[in-house]
Length: 292
Image 1 (cartoon, helix red, strand yellow):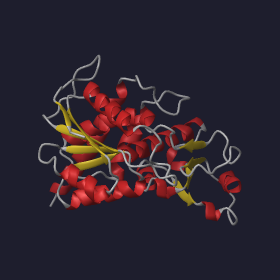
Image 2 (image 1 turned 60 degrees about the vertical axis):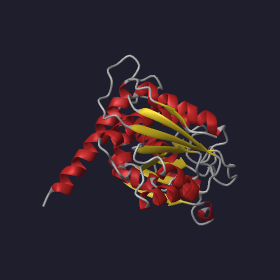
Image 3 (image 1 turned 30 degrees about the vertical axis):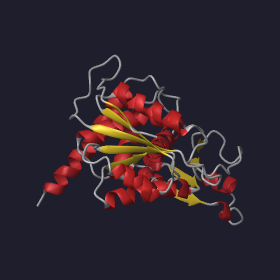
Image 4 (image 1 turned 90 degrees about the horizontal axis):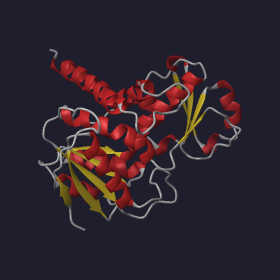
C-alpha cells in the first residue's frame, strides 16, 4: 500500500479554528491479525479506523493528515515506518496495536528520536478515567474519596497512574487469579467503581458501578483525539505521560452532562476543553523545567 497525503487544513465545524503551527500528524493503522487474548486490539477493519480518525482530525483541527497503513504488527517495523516520516510529521497516532505492542512501538520510536507517538489505547485510557470520575459523581462520591478496582490492569498499563493523577483516592488491581482469596463481588462491597478491562466481571459484581473497555474504541477516541493532538502538536511535546492523559480525562469529565458517562460526539466544547487543560499541563512542565 502507498502512503496517502492530505494537506487540507480545516477548522472545527461551526467554530473558529484552533491556532496551531503548520504541522502534520500521521495516522498509522496496523492491519496485522488481532490476538484473541488481548481486548485492546478491536476486531474491526483497520482501514476503516484509519479513515475515521483521519477525517476526525481534519474536521476538528487545522492539522494536516498523512495516512500510513501498515500490514505488520512487528513493533520494530512499525517504528521504522513512523521514524521515516520525520521531520515532516510532528506526531503519529497509532491504531490496531495491543497494549504490549503499543509500549514497544513508543519505546522504539523514542529511542530513535522519532515523532511523538500517541496510540488509540492512550485515548481510551483517558476516556476510562473520565468515565470513572462520572460514575463516582453519579454515586455521590468525590473522586478524591473514590475507591476503584481495576480488573486486568495489564490491558491498559497507564490507566492506574492516570487515575491517580486524576485525583482518584484509592486504586487496587485485581486479576482472575485473585478470585479464590478475594472474590470480586465481595471486594466490591468495600469499593466504589470496578473498571473491567479483562471482561471477566459478572453483572452482579458491581451493578451500576462497572466501567467496561469499549467494544469500539473509536466511540471514546473521537471525543479525545482532536483536543489531545491539538495540544500535543501545539506545544511540540516529545512524551506522553499519565499527567497529560489525566488532564484530558478531567476536561472530558467536566464537559460530561449530569447523569451521563461521557459527552455526546457532537458536544462542541470537548475539543477545546481538552486542548486547554492539556496545554496547561505542558505550560506547567515547561516552567518547571526552566527553574534553576
